[in-house]
Length: 346
Image 1 (cartoon, rainbow, N blue to C red):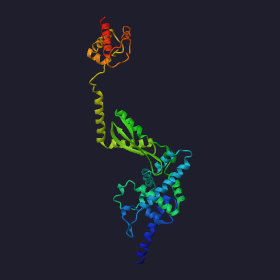
Image 2 (image 1 turned 45 degrees about the vertical axis):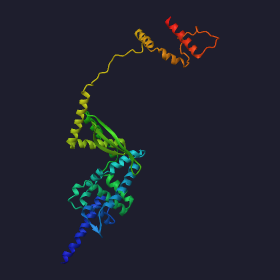
Image 3 (image 1 turned 60 degrees about the vertical axis):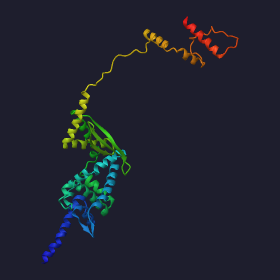
Image 4 (image 1 turned 180 degrees about the vertical axis):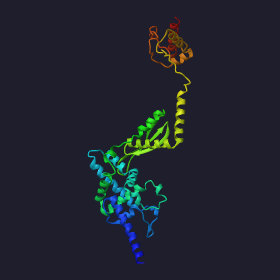
């Protein structure tokens, strides 16, 4: 009877000792207050409640995310002296992104300690990375900021990540996609969809890939290059996984090439008209046109009522002499018309 009681006491103690040992292997130190670390390892899927409230690692994950960003930013800033903000931001984002954190959690053995319901852990691709952030939140509450800095420097960057390599590593997905398009003779373009600033005031860009005018994938990043790389990567994945997308691209290509091969209905003339040269025929036509447009007698009479100054010397007014005898307005007009007609007849 007594031995059974002792065994029941030893069992939780043994599990506690195993947890301390496992955490030491990951952290490099023993926890001071184990409750933070237990909470960091508790996934929400286990539906644990305390006083009617759900207990899980989501709040610690939120805290750890902020602490991790600050710590990595501090390390990157000190390591890369003289580098501009865009480079530092890009390097930090590569380290704290979900894919990197998931791989780190796997390498550290953290996934083996996560308390979860089990049936949905395989479907949660962010499980390890989220738990790693919660663990950093636990370290901060247990031992402070300096302990978090030491953990990231000694246990992550020194052992698992080559900081220089990750900063300058650039997989050129854009080059791979353009090469594929050239081989298949399809047109590709990158369109800027959005340009804004994040919560920290850093500029972000979103680009979209279009192949033969067919929409591909969008990619966002802290530079145009980074966003186009991401858009290219996602579009390459889509080309590999979605045959219907490839069909749409080549259908668009067929329509484009068909339109390019069809001849235009009208061919432009190559003869240049020398219409700026006046020929004899043109001159004769001009004279005939001016003759046909001479005003009739009635029209001339009406026009004579409106005195005007001739623009040329077509009319010779030397035959019209001054008559001291006072004449009426009608007789003056009649005399002028008679002189004009006699001159035209001659």
